[in-house]
Image 1 (spheres, rainbow, N blue to C red):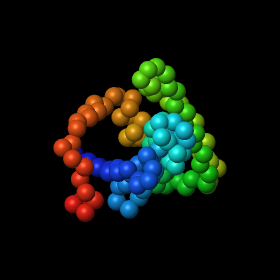
Image 2: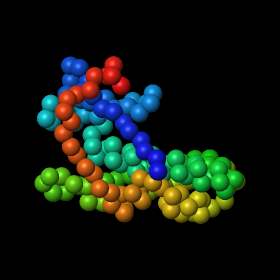
Image 3: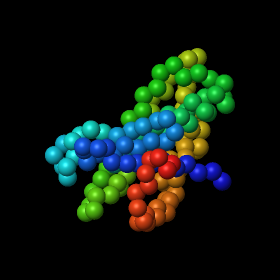
Image 4: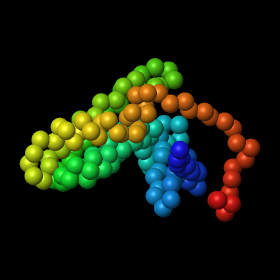
Length: 143
């Protein structure tokens, strides 16, 4: 079993958060004017859509390497539908346009990536999410 941990902290002078894993960072915020948001980064729905699409893009590359084919052009679009109070994502639709270097049909590549995509398969199967209050904010120097 493996695990990944990401960290998020507030960005001084804003109500946005910076998240990171290793040397990679992202800003998370609400749209400007909503609950103190300044539109400095992605909102939760956008982050979810990016996780779904980004993971699939990575898996397409893994599968392409396994099959010995090269990807010439790739375009992925993810739409998440939301409703309710509290707001919940009720569905996600991903459209994948993939052109292979040799001009062959990419449907096999897309199907194999679909089978192995960790994010979409995890969401499809449902995952428990536990949220607990931590005793205090850990200083960055302690990390």
